[in-house]
Length: 348
Image 1 (cartoon, rainbow, N blue to C red):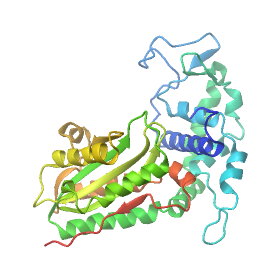
Image 2: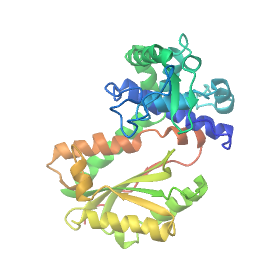
Image 3: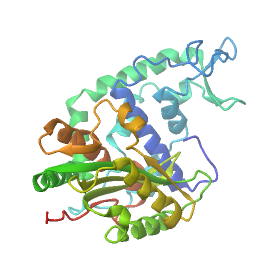
Image 4: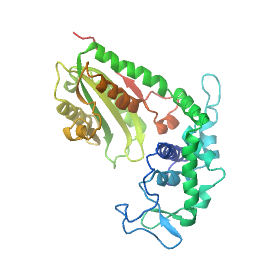
C-alpha cells in the first residue's frame, strides 16, 4: 500500500500493516525463494524493463518484497502505536500489542540495516518501483534475516501467542469440531464454497457491507437456494483489491441435494441481484474447472467414510476461514463478530 494522502491516517496505517504482515509471511514461508527480486528478461510481462540506468533497476512486482517495501516505506511505527495502542486493554488490563509478530520481526531485523534509507525507493512514471542497485546486498541480507528470525523460538512463541490472543487457535478447534459433528450427523454432505464481494467501482462502507450480509444471512431459513442446508460457516474479510467481502462454506444434505454448481450459482445470483441490487459479484468455487484446479479438492459430494477429504475441509477450508483478517482486527475492535456458523440441523 503506497502512501495515499486521501486516506485517513488510521486507515492508511492499518492497510500498510496488513501489507507488511502478508509480505513477511510469504517471505518466511519460502514462497519467494526462487522468484527474481528485480525485473529481468525472464519476468513477464516486463521483459523490456530490465534497467533504468546503470545505477537503478525495477523491483519485480510479483516478489513479496515489492509489497513489503511499498507499505513499509511510509510506515510510521510511533504514529501507529499512538493511534492504535493507546487506551486499548484486554480483559486482564494489559496493554494490547496490535502490531503483528510478522511486522515486529521486520522492525527487529531492520534495526541495523535501515532498508528504507538504503534502497532510495522511487516510483517511476510507468508506476513501477525502482531501487538503487548498490542496495541489493542489503535487501538480500534483510530477506535472509527474516527467514532466520522466523526460526527462533522467541518468534514462534510470539506467533503462538498472537494466534491465541486473536482467537485463531480457539476458532480453529471450535469450527473443526463443528465440521466433524456435521459428518457424524449426516453420512454424506454436499460441500460448497462461494465468495461474495462487490464490483471494483463500488464504494461500499463497512456499515453497508454488514447490512447486506445480515440481510443475506436472514434469508437462509426461507430462501429456496438454501433448501436442505444443514450447516454453514461465514467469514468477513477486507482486501486492498477486493475491498469488503465474505467467504461462505456451506453443507447440504447429500441425500437430498446433488448439483453443487447450480446451488452455488443460485446463491451468487441471490447476492448479486437481490441483496446488492447489481453492485455485487460472486465467485463460484464449485465449477468443474475450479475444482480441478485444486491439488486436494474437498468440494462437492463428500461421504463420511472419506476421512482424507474431511481432513482437507478442515486443513484447507476451515483453517482459511478462521484465519485472522488483519485489517478488520485493527479497524473493527470491540465491534460485531466477523466469523460465524449456523446451527446444525438434526437429521429427520
